[in-house]
Image (cartoon, rainbow, N blue to C red):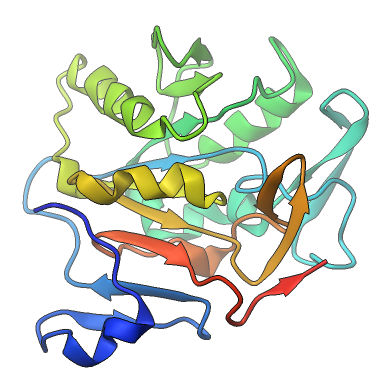
Length: 236
């Protein structure tokens, strides 16, 4: 089934079989039962402002964790989002995992990569090899083109398939803070969700989440969910 976006304005015409989800007003989607009977599930996460938050900012984001002495972009303290700290208490703890990031996670052998891998490995063992998005040799993909993460997610699923783990497209869940990375999933069978909707900022030429992902962002909804611009959002 093709993924789709349902905004609040359409809630009145949604059938009883597809109930609208509205988490504090900031998001809207269609919610149905999730994982299919076979194949397991796959959760794929962006890194910056998804698994991380704005560096050193725990005044706006008190649930985030500053990792003192571990650089982020070479000069800031790495600051992990609530999501990064709690993947193992979301539904994704029973899924296979992957990363799709436009950045390089501070380069080879960085403390940032080590910290992220530690959090991802709370319930499973991922390879410690990170790879380029265009030539994947692991499910940890870097340098993925902004707006082109559908291909990255497909490559991660293919990597698992090459290891005799076949996951249906409908059981794949992608999480990213930027709309331009989530919107391209609309015409696919993958599920995708924009996260960190409540507190946003315009920085580095993009509309970004300040705090990154939260535990409540990781839900097993079917389809594509985007933040609703200007509604129940705060910009700093």
